[in-house]
Amino acid sequence: MSKSNGKSPKLHNAMWPGLVGKGDDEGQEPSISLDRMLELTQAAEVDGQKFEGIDYFLFLPHTDPKSSDDEIRAIADRIASKGFTVGSLVAPVWPGTVGDSAMGDETARQKFLEAVKVGCRIADIFNRHGIRQYGVIRIDSAEFGVEKWRQNPVANTKRIAETFREAAKIATDHGERLAAEGEICWAGMHSWKDMLDLLEEVGQPETVGFQADLAHTYLYLLGYNAPEHALLQPDYSEEDFYRAYETMTDKLRPWTIDFHVAQNNGEVHGAGDHEKTGKHCPADDPNGKLDIVRCAGYWLKDAEQRGIRHICWDGCMFSNAMLEISSTWNTILEKMITVRNTHGWN
Image (cartoon, rainbow, N blue to C red; front, side, top):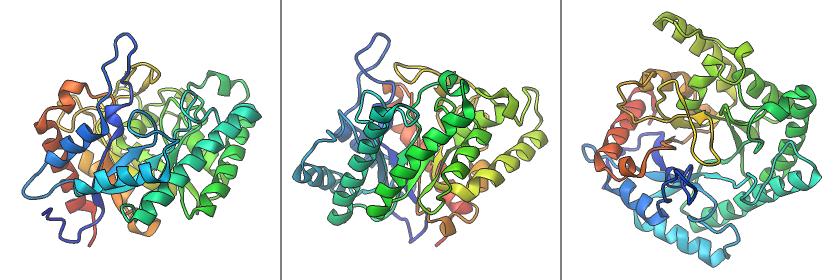
């Protein structure tokens, strides 16, 4: 029995590190099945504490978005059999999945909205099943790279916001909230300032909020894809870092409704269709730039009031060999426990 002792937020592991950047293309490793990701997560334990849930990507090979209600309930049963709940769900909004660019033409935008419907439909089934009682549906602009957006930033941000407002209507009908993932690769969301501008343009904080990831938002500080919005220079001091960190989190924290614990070494990483994204590192990476526990506190201040009931570890782009080592997960879980003990609530 996991010793959560009624503490919040609950500790979740993401299933998508077994999928993101994986595949059959040259230089890629094969994906890791849902069942194996569940097994690896279930095996982690630190002083009697285990992961309490998972966050889940709604696409193949883990889930066919066209699955019947019975097939989705069977997946819920498999997850429950490992002792887990389900938290946030990642809608398949990208080209090549169900969706397409939120900045695109009308056909593309309708595909994006269809992906949000898929997310809400599966959320409904999980909710009725009882395996899911909290969490959001995660989206992004599904416009990979910023060059096209830069051709007309104001109009393109308005276009994405228009799509997000339509998506918000769908989410509201299902009692769900949408969290836009802050990551440097998504057009219109590629810097802290552009992300804030988009959220304010959408203007529906009760339904459309921000998903903060420690690794990705560190690159926001550096202005990797938006030098004009950099808050840090390469030779920054510790004092410079936390001054900049407070500036960024004060702006984005009021919008933050989903949170990923992660580490970053200041580099970007590419694999397959995820070229030049924020690089996630092991929790104990000696080159990690973040004091994970201290940085998490900036995002988790007043988290309960914003409806956050769980936090999730994100380790995208970890090698399969690293994912298969039990110490990887125990180290991650230990860091998650420290984050909760330091910044959580009963």
